[in-house]
Each structure stands twice: as structure tokens, then as C-alpha cells.
Amino acid sequence: MKLISYTQGPGPRCGLALSETVGIDLLSADPSLPGNWHALLPNLERVHEIHLQFKDQLGDVEKARLQGSDLALPFLDLNKVELLSPIILPSKIIAVGLNYRDHAEEQNKTLPERPLLFSKASSCLQIPGGPIALPPECAQVDAEAELAVVIGKAGRAIAREDALQHIAGYTCFNDISDREAQYSDRQFFRGKSMDTSGPCGPWIVTPDELPNFATGLNITCHWNNTLMQTSNTDQLIFPVDELIAYISRTISLLPGDIISTGTPGGVGVFRDPKVFLKPGDTITVEIQGLGKLSNPVVAWEG
Ligand code: ZN
Image (cartoon, rainbow, N blue to C red; front, side, top):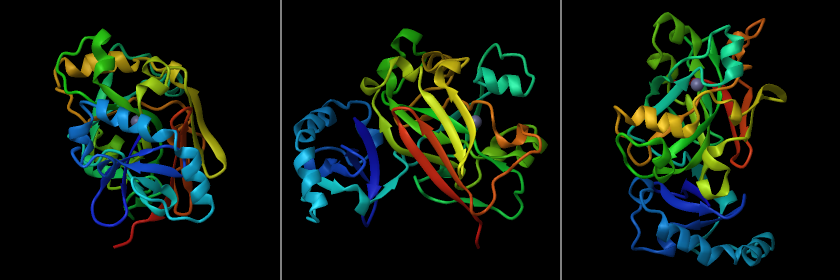
């Protein structure tokens, strides 16, 4: 099941993607549901029922769409709505540094003994297809393809073997990083939190559609047509269940919280010569089973 946030006018709405082109509006399917994912994620049972109720009609609906008919609610033509970041304003975005073996190697760093956590401001989230806007003072902006976990059920001190019960699903994340700020500040917050530096989406894929803890998935990052990063989530030093256990020892995880699990090798700053984003580029993160997250790079205006 693929969970989306979308808009077609005022305000964000919750939905499901049945395919790349056809979706379901959840409140039209069941008006008694809460209208935001923070309230829905802790218990997706009813949402699963709605998915089962409508998914078999996909073939007929797709045919009608191709014949030019307007789809009747609860069905949505995903080409006619704007997909948003699947989670809007999470209580926190926790990111993990140095969590791929190949990324640690390219920096000649020994493997960390415990996860290195940092945070990104929730306001940095950007929608699928939305611009990554480079402020004039940021000349060294880089991209990082990452697997992100979205928390469903709140928890504190979650045991590793219970981690799955707290996961709503997985999505693609691009941890856009201003290297100048990241290194000169000697901590990550400013360099990782610039507006538009958190492209996320296009949807949250529930765990039942993926291998256990999303291991063994190919992950790539293309800058235009150039393959910059290619790896697999089995390269994660600290896998998803271990991250959830480690973080929640001291930090409560809340519904909608995003944990971005770190990036593989190949980022721009460790290349020789270094390369950074420039207006006109398009950056595409793709993860097997999760789809593609593509965002153009533009110069900041205003
Ligand atoms: Zn990162």
C-alpha cells in the first residue's frame, strides 16, 4: 500500500496511490476518518480495508482515465493533483551520518561504533518534483540519496524485536546538504536544514510490500543522466530496527517522524574534483520498490 499526501486546491489531503496514475482520496472513501496522517498512521487497519475495497477496480478506472473520463471520487487522477511530501511537518526529522560502509570508506573513516545522529528542520521538506532552491550564499550544495523510515505508532525505549510495530512505512529522501555550513559550523543543523533541502516521497510504502526492514533494496542517485551514487540497503551499518531501538532509548518517536538512514558513497563533495548542484540540474533518488523522487535545482529567488 502506498500512502500519499496531495492537494487539488485548499489544504493537504490523505490518499492512497493504487498505481502511478490512479489514487484514492481517503476522506471521500470514509468521511469518518481523521484528515491527517499523524492521526491515521498509528492504526492503518481501516486504511488497509479501504485499499482492499477499491484496488480491484483499478483496471476499470485506469481504462476510463485513458478514455479521457474524469474520475469519480474516491478515485483520483494522480496526473491532475499535486503530490506533497507524504508527511507534512513531522515533529522531527532524524538523520544518520556515516551509515553506509562504502560512504565511510570514501572518507577513510573507520566504521562508527554507534549511529551518529543529527536533525534537519521539519520546514526543509520539499514535495516530489518541487525545486531545490540554492540560496546565493550557498556554493557547495550536495545531494544524498537515502532510505527514510516513517514512524507509525509512538514509542519510547522500543526493543529491536518490536521495531516493526512502530513503522508506518518507507520513502525516498534526498538529504540536500550545504557542505560549507556543515563543515564550518562543526555541527550539522544549519548545513542540513536550508529550505527545500528535504525532498521526500513520492509516497510511503507500507512494510508488507517490502523485505524485512527494507533490506536488500538497490538505491541510486542520478544528477541529470550521471549516476552518482549506487548501492544497496544491505550496506547499512546500522539497520532500521537497530536505529529505532537506539534512537528511542532516549528520544520518543512520534507518528509521522522521519528517520533518514544515511547515504551511500559517491556524493559530490568527496569526488575529485568536487562537484556541487547548479541551477538546471535534476536530481533523482530511486529506491527499489519505493519509486523515484526527482527534483529540479534552481537559483533561489527573492
Ligand atoms: Zn545524509
